[in-house]
Length: 470
Image (cartoon, rainbow, N blue to C red; front, side, top):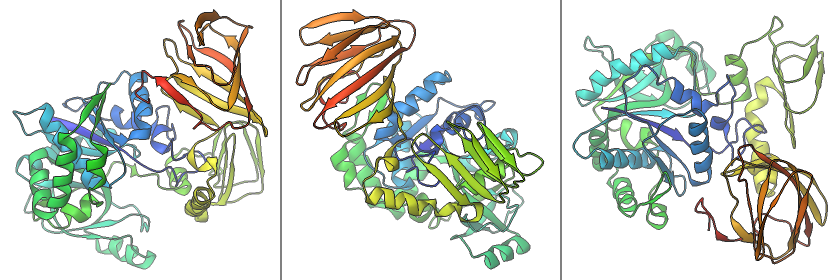
């Protein structure tokens, strides 16, 4: 019984400005038509498994659910972390959920990250089948990527004896090396990139965690026992989980256990940890450029250029990254692109919105795009999915004027409920309880003009909400 566990965390720093804190890279279609999370689910096809479990940040829960819905994928539950505590607690929660859902068995957990690229999914699936044999014999399997270069951005796994099996014992986990040391690893052989993917039985992992980090297991069990169901989400107790220590599975278990083995994997893997890494995995033209959107490149080589809104013209550039979004533009040398994290840290420290989200913000009911703003006004383009409804709410500081562009809106405005059709509008005064719903079969598009002394998103008092955000 195999249960994939897809870890969908991330802070959205390494691929800024495309990736943001509320919309990190796993939700973006960076290396194909599917988002990275959807591609993770797609590559499971061909394996016999139960519906996968997902572990994600509470703020990302509706994005995960919507992306699975759009691809028609079933799941075994979406476990919500109230706050990040690294991978060991996250996997412990997934193991507890897998055992609670399958109390008469000990399922094998295939732990995957939602934001990896694998170009050869069949080789990946073959490796998973092999790894199940090791996991069934009590081993904790980590997948070691066969290195193709002296990469300094990955941790390494030093392998030991194979004992005539396809997997090898783990001698050591090695931190990200210097360039010279990485070259030595490549020349010596027996070293693999640490992929962060694992396979083991749920009970076996929890047993090892109990031996080496009983404090983490106790906190996770305590929080899980007080869990609640919220739509399709499993919500563990926030206060109890807040006391859980933070640690990775490598430090908490894999470096300490005597049952760790590494299975070599050569499947065109990348964790896409920087813009230069993304350039490595994307198709390129004869000049070595990878371009997305409306781009004209003249006398330019080995560049990554992404235009989401407008034309980008590049002339005489070498090894440059250009990423243009609605509210931010990144220009960086490809060798320095990993330093974008410093920009993100500055944005976070200054409390700027560009750290948190793009101009277009996704909600469980649809999305909005802040197309203009001033000192006492803001203009949004709002899209409401068919059948979706915003919360019943009120604002203390702003009034709103809604103009329907397409579709039909069902509006609650104080004591009145009525329909507003295309080219018509309604006005919501300050302090009036109101709601917006799309009763139709096509998306509802409208322009919202807000006016008032304060226009922040925290000026929302919710009275009813079908998405549990009261």
